[in-house]
Image (cartoon, rainbow, N blue to C red; front, side, top):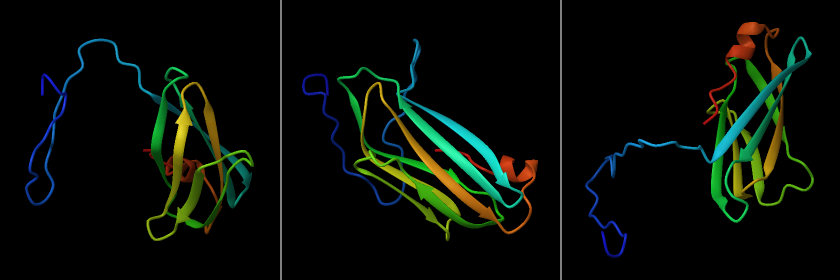
Length: 136
């Protein structure tokens, strides 16, 4: 490992931990997520997710996936990306009750945005808003 900086192993069957580590100095997360929830009508919410790449401009994140859990009473949801959003896809997976946003590349120092319009089977309350998330 010291010479080539390469870790090789033969994985066992099933799930396992490849590596555990601890950071003792200052650590700056590479991405920041800013969620915003707005009530459009008593039965509709608009959720806006902004993701900012907090890294130098010469770096980028590749194949970034953002997952957003939706409230239990979600009847339908539609995803809207800006017209200039290239290499991005977002969809509501009703079976999992979550929105999945895939970004092929996000350049350092940039921000991307996703807007989700959600229709609820019941009237939206503060509890409904609290059921949005977590974002991972």
